[in-house]
Length: 330
Ligand code: BTN
Image (tube, rainbow, N blue to C red; front, side, top):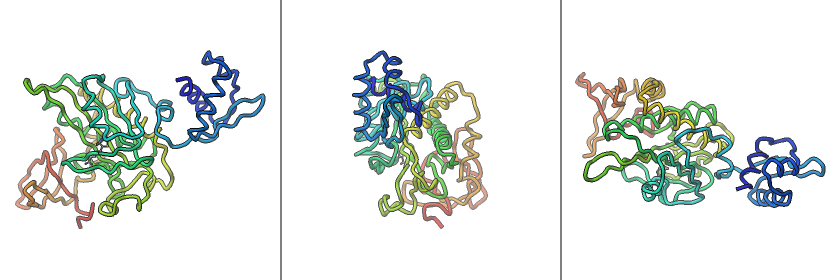
């Protein structure tokens, strides 16, 4: 534990020296404990200089997904109040669903790698280690299940805002909740609801977010290579995953408070980022049929309002909608 505290002190003073004496006094631990923790941090890849009579200076930090890299940026109330970080796990959504009974609302599970990452419609979500951020939040709002159906759209807005805070990029939303930039998918969201089987009341919600962060184009599997993108491909430089994770959790926390109180202008924020609007689309039905349409609006429930070729308006509330000019639809 004191190792994390020492890391936080070094991070706060990054680039300048702080004496071992000052650290040991601040934390009420011995000088020997400080130097042991510094050695251990070096073993994890932190470059820490030590100079006689000046102390320690953090010069460079690895892009590891650890509490030590996330906590200094975290500024949350409910979402993220219990933070669990895994190096490898099957799926952060699965973990929270498995352990749901023992975990408080607001728990966030973060993973450096997922071996069984899941996407929507039973698809797998490629979750390689060291290049992505995979996280899920457990929420227990006291609302009817129907009221919770729009939460995933709010999550999409929050994820865009978190990415923007960390990188300055301005991601867009492909209805309903793919996060896209320059025509490539950066991030997917999978929101799952747990209902009480007898009363059909809402027990909890797990919302999972997978972000491609530092992949290069050739790292993506061939079948998605032209459609997928990473933040580093957009910024042209590596993106630090600890800060990004924290900014996404911070944005989720603000969003959840707003969602519960029914306040804030998420519908407007969603519409502004929704790249589907004003474009030709195809409605892909579960039976394999495809209908052309034009996307006109997003309604109060975050349904997609489309104009059909016969001039009639229709609201789409679920299913796949492909957008002309995106993901190979020309
Ligand atoms: C999609 O685009 O189909 C949704 C992808 C959701 C992936 C995230 S990664 C964190 C969480 N754990 C999972 O197994 N899935 C979600």
